[in-house]
Image (cartoon, rainbow, N blue to C red; front, side, top):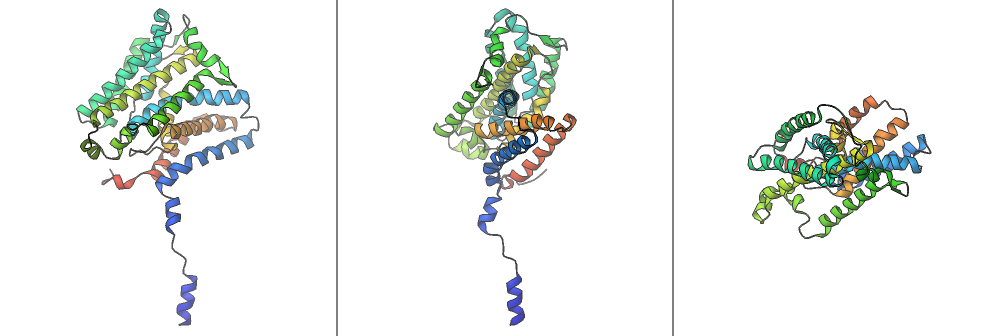
Length: 334
């Protein structure tokens, strides 16, 4: 009897349900990203106390904006359970379209660029939904195709924007509270998307398709149209990011935004959007974009070799997917 009592006293307690809930993918997606952002800000501030001064804040937000816009577009596709690997390439093509049309059309070139990239995204969506081809395959093919188109249109050279540059110059030159006008516009866009998705009766259609396409279809949601719309929005936001990049650099190039593909995907996933679909918001993408940007800019400030940035992004994406993946939606892991 004494031996039994002794054994009972040293037996470790089993994890409680509350502990399991705190470590669940849902909890990690909700609380993890904001906490990680605060931790990064604290670490960088300790290493460089003047990092978040007025000028540095302007630089951080300006660099985060293209990632935020590309991430917003990617978010709609990921919400439906797909992925768009062509967002960065379409963005690069958008800068070329803008540079080649702004001289003759002025501010109208912005609208031309956004419409063109939205149409490109819609084509990818049509091929994915109507052809019943995985989005990974279609968007990978689109990446190569539109990259070649950008090379052909630009002659594989950088195009400097001189005539009517003032039509986009104000996006990066005008500031309020040391933050560029383009960033404020991006904040407004994010708030509008968040409000629509959280308040409008039909604002969760992308989530519903990602959580279960067949149940969504049976409930009357036009799932194919929603999936096409998701890719069209991905293209649209690629065009907006192209305008911002061209305004910041006064130039266009067929590979100007290509290096932003992995950071943009990382921003969506790190922010708490589920790769399996159905979970995500503009706020999550904003947090993710800031995390990735601080990793980039803060890493340079603290002396981390820029050559290791892609390693960091790749590692972060893998860790986040492992921690937040909803395995209940996957019957077979391939």
